[in-house]
Length: 301
Image 1 (tube, helix red, strand yellow):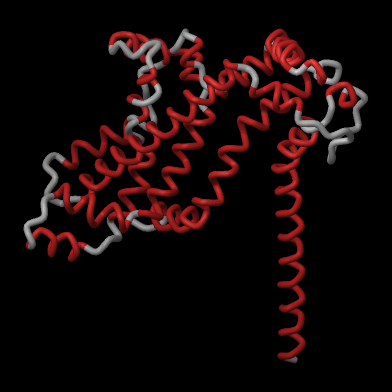
Image 2 (cartoon, helix red, strand yellow):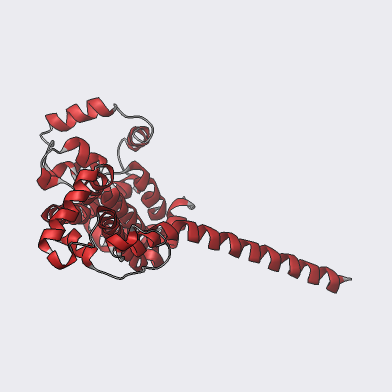
C-alpha cells in the first residue's frame, strides 16, 4: 500500500515537473523570439526581406545593414553618450546608495527615525513632471550631461534592498575594526563593500539596464543632438520613417555596392539589435550574483 502511494506521488511530481518545464519553455520562447526575429531580419538583405517569410533564419545573409548603422555619426555619438552615462551613472548611484544604506543600518545615526519616513515617501509621491522640469532648469542641469547623473545618484528602492543585506553582516566585524581605530569610511570601503558584492552587483545590473533603456530624460531634459542617447535615437528611428529612410540613403551612398539591397526596414531592425545586445552580453557576467543578491537583500531583514 505504501509503495503504491509512493509511486503515485512520484508520478504526480514528475507530471508537475514536466508541466513546469513546458510552461518555462513557452515563456522563454515568447521572451526570446522577438529579439531573434530582429536578429534574423537584420542579417537578411533588405530587398529580399520585403518578400516576407524571414521568421527564424536569414534567407540571404548580409552585414550591410550593420554597416549602415555604424556609418551614421549620430548613432556613434549616441552610443558614446549612453556608455558614458551607464558607467558614471552606475558607479555614482551604487556608491551613494550603498553609503546611505550603511548609514541607515548604524544604530548611532542621529535622527534616524526621521530620515527613513522621508526617504520612503519619495517612493510613492513626487512633485509632478512640471515642477520637476522647473527644478532641473533652476539647477542648470537642462541640456547638460549631468542631468543623466545627479538625479539618479540615489534610489530609495535600492537602498531598502542594500540595507536589508547589510543588516545581516556580522556586527562584530565592525566593532573589532572600531577597536583597531578604523574610521567609518575605512570600515565602509574595506569591510562592508567587499562583503556586499552580491547585492551591489545585483543593484549595478538594475542600474545599468535602467540607464541603458532610459530615453525619457534625454527627450525631456536635453535639446542638443550631442546629448542624444541611443534609446532616444532608436525611438526616433522607429516612430519617424524619414529618419530610417535617411539611414538607408546615407548607407547606400557610403556602400554603393550594397545600395540596391538596403531598405529602411532592415536598417531599423539592425538598429534595434545594436541597442539591445550590449545589456544582453553584460548579464551573464553578473548572473551569479543576481539570485543571491536579491534573495539576501529582499527576503531577509
